[in-house]
Length: 312
Image (cartoon, rainbow, N blue to C red; front, side, top):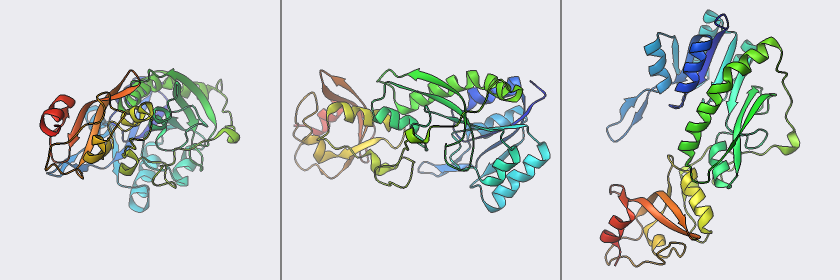
């Protein structure tokens, strides 16, 4: 196993379980990840966990802002230099260009967090929660030109508990994916695992409801419609945590009949146009009860603290 050389492509901070398993079982020679990003009010630079881990392990890493022009040439130069036998892609954020696909010649494996061909695109975990699915899973597939349409090597089903956030579910599925990954790579290498084409008739995509030509989640998608049933609102709150966080307007919370406590009345002189992020909630006898929220410009607070400061 150690004779096989691998390259990893990923940006998620949840990638450590996969990296450790690749490092322990193969010769991990290259990591490709996103360049440092500016975060917070002070715009401080933050590196990905992939970059930090690779640096600590003494493994070559390449930082990119895109997969075009100079960045693409740099990645290809390093692939030619280190000559990995396989590539593994997990939550990478970039579409893999044809030049890289050709380099690996059918040995570039993508880890997708749904049971393909269901939920092709960038937001499969969020959509599984949004739609109230009972099960989701992990698919290992060979990357092709078309998004998430490559042949399937293996799949693992996972029963959801109907209370997890997308952040929690991603964390779980990354560990599920990491456990079986070495067996999938070796199975493909030995020929014991045969790639199977997907059924195109069953393909669905995670198109944004506010940006219908894009499969990513956008902030606008998180706006809560309080006319929806409490269960679907709870699903949205969980699906959009940790990002972009479901939100509403203060005036609309006032009229939200799905709250356990019924409609509320804001104190006088409070601006109802302020936005409010809803971090967590739970269902209570078919009603929605908000647990944590954040009024625009304020800190995160409990519902009790919100009542004390904003409700008559």
